[in-house]
Image (cartoon, rainbow, N blue to C red; front, side):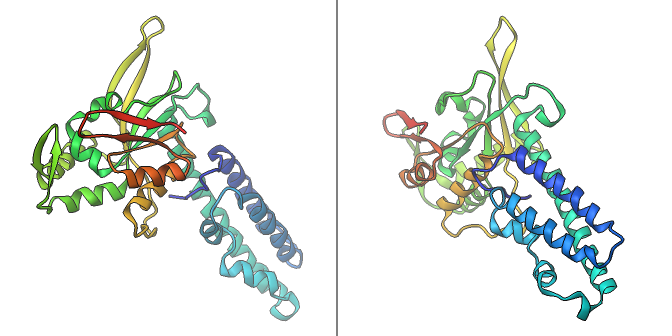
Length: 302
């Protein structure tokens, strides 16, 4: 998966990357071997300028400012040979265009998952508001996920649905909790964490049998007069295979929640833990703090 900056516009990123790939192929098709390196430099520098506000630095390095990019910036065609240099430049352009095509494909697929009907292909769209549930929420409410909206109320657009965004770090923590000897209080009763973790994982497996797809958990009628419904769904957030998780587990969950912002119609982090709630709020995310003892649900949408 390609990562966008939290403030980026997904459709704008798709537009810029698509145009960049097309322009790269046009430059690669040039027959003037002397002009190709300078045309590449103009193309590459323009794309860095266009994409720097949309992609983090490491994505720019992967797609554009590679080691080959820096070499081409300084190499002299007279000393290297115009034909040889043009061949080298063409290989870099072809590789860049292919990588950008792949990035566009991934962004389109992720945008589709979060909007149901893709604006790129027409249609009104059904945007999803993401609920990023902390590990402790799954431990307490694994059997109530189909009505999670009643547990953590959020303000939504009239046509928006709710999607439980399952973050990989939460899955790792649930898996580790299966070995825990500690107890937690659920519904006023003390229970073993390991048992609740196993139940939560089993429920996730049942509700989300295909991790690459969106699982519909519930459909609610919003306005019977026009048959408008709101869905509650669950989906696994997409992460880069090569990405190294942040060592601080709360910071990792917040970081993944931020990465969803460019696709979802709002993101709310839900937890019983004050620490992660504070980190999420400081990151500009909506938060919902749950309270176990008195059953009160409080939060903000700032």
